[in-house]
Amino acid sequence: MELRRARSLVAYWVDGELVLDDFLAPTPPDGEKQGVAVDGTVVDLLSEFDEWTEPEVVAARLEEHDPQSVVEAVDALAEVGLLRTKDQADAEDLVLEKWNAWGPSATYFHFDTKDTAYLSVERAAGDAAAYARRNDIRAEIQDSGPAPEPITRRPDAERIRLTRAFLPLQRDFGDVLLSRRTHRHFTDDAVPVRALSTILHYTFAPMHFFNAGILGELMLRTSPCGGARHESECYVAVRNVESVPPGLYRYSADDHSLEVVSKDFTQEDLERIAFGQKMITTAGFVCFLTVNVHRAMYKYRSARMLRTVLLNTGHLAQTFALVSTAVGLGPAQNDAFHDTELEAALGVDGASETAVYQLSAGVPARRADGQPIADSSTDEERTIAAGQDTRE
Image (cartoon, rainbow, N blue to C red):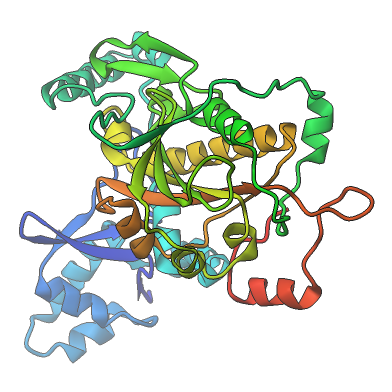
């Protein structure tokens, strides 16, 4: 029977051991995948099966080893899934074909975190093993130190207090929903400071707080968030907002203010970071969303949480877009930015806090029928060719 090395293997070192992780391996009932520790001999043996090969053929090639021991080793590797039969390879080939354009990093993350087991209260109540595991996780959280604060506070930062004279959100919801569009062209009119204040408050500020015991004090925003961790921070690049000097700020949800990050953040900096995209570089202001990793990771220790964190930023983006539309501005959003340079400008380390999204808004330039001005087909084709976000 011919065998082939699994093509869905990722290798990494754990405590001095080389581990091969098959991201297409079925997730066990407890939701915890385990890689296989290997040594150099195993790696050499696997390399003999880059294409379909009979174990006996490999045993004959490896003259320095006893043929029977080679066959037994091959059987063991097939047993743990590092070698595939042709039937097993069909599913693997399908995945790798369909996900080819996104490469191994995206494929690995998506498939390696599929079928993660969740220890819900309901499941734990009727399952002794699940109840014990849930208690173990609770103890692990408790032993890891105090819960992170729900809001980052920097009392010594220079700041600009924002008005709390919020614009009324009385526009018909159906009209707001149907009017929301991604805008790529803005006028030179300054964004009213009340509009900026209203958008930041209703998108990023806490509406309520509650005590979650060992998980700490949590805030509730207008957008849903896994476990109410609300790990996203908002930084604001101001270009053209009345009464607010251009620069880079952090929105302080604690006191509804803009903390000064850099007064020297220039248009050239924004152009470079956002790859020159007009929907970002000509807007009145841009919100850069980062993730406070510890705030999310404190409760959720599974890699699956990364998927949740990214979904959470999407929830915030939709709220941002709807509130911007409701106050008469044109919103836009995408994730096409230079991560490392942006994080350096924000003053975050890219590890404990990392950039994930950018949202912009400005006074929209409109056609006579009220719809946003669309880019020319040439511009659109150029954007697609560069692999950037073109969502409407």
